[in-house]
Image (cartoon, rainbow, N blue to C red):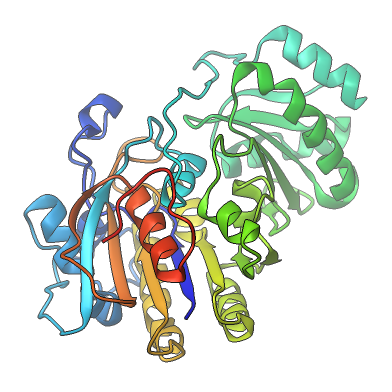
Length: 402
């Protein structure tokens, strides 16, 4: 008897009930991607035909989308299949960021407000910059504004190589991001600077400091690498990972899960460069997971490579590639295993700007014990509560099992 939680990062299925408060009323990541593909409006001339996700649809993705929005995404009609369970969930946490979504999935809603940097230029307090320069022993910083990571590296990467000054920027999330060249500046040096920044931004209630290494020699060929590292504050309460670790269960985390949870209770971590490599890591981890164990995976490309860059056709292709590999995972489930596929927020590639969108998420379940109807859930924490019950762990403080 094992369990897995698989997070398709940013694969939202329609605006949350409180989306208007975030400027996201009408956002629908899956629905708008499906509409664009069906209409031939995806932003790539090589894209042809409707969105094709037969395995996710069989698990209930289309039906969950209909439950969330009252409309069926083009090409994702759910025809029903016995033994499968689906629903949708709305976030209770105040943010629409990665840590808030994942922590709530793991049983800890974020009730406090994160700190954010203003949309001014410069955006960072002068005293923060002064202390970072002094404490990290750097010759200054570049950027100091809200920006897209790929764009600001293209704009300032060459100057960074000339001056040795790291590129510091933020977004609508509660983040302080630092980009530097992996060889010229040094990967370990970048991590050291981020470690200093981590404790410097604590008074500002910033959720994550993110190291963004890149390679290349000119603006034309700069490329971010897979050596990203997130330095997050730890969750304020015990998550399902903490509970599993306390009960001496084996835990395997895939992708950036260990960073999101500040390496607390995340067990053995496996990383890969891109969704396909992460899928391989997940299969390997699942094969090695003993009875009573928990696997927690994040597939980040949907969000970081396609959602934030507003790449509709790329997002659609990534969804289809993930869907094609799903049978490899589902065929490895034993009769008493539980798998829950979900998301942490939305990142609608048709939406203005390049930020996350406040959306409901799918809850697609295979295996497990007897369920009541999942339906519409008020809170992601029901996922953690269900997994804890399945594994016979102590109940979590938040959430109600299916």
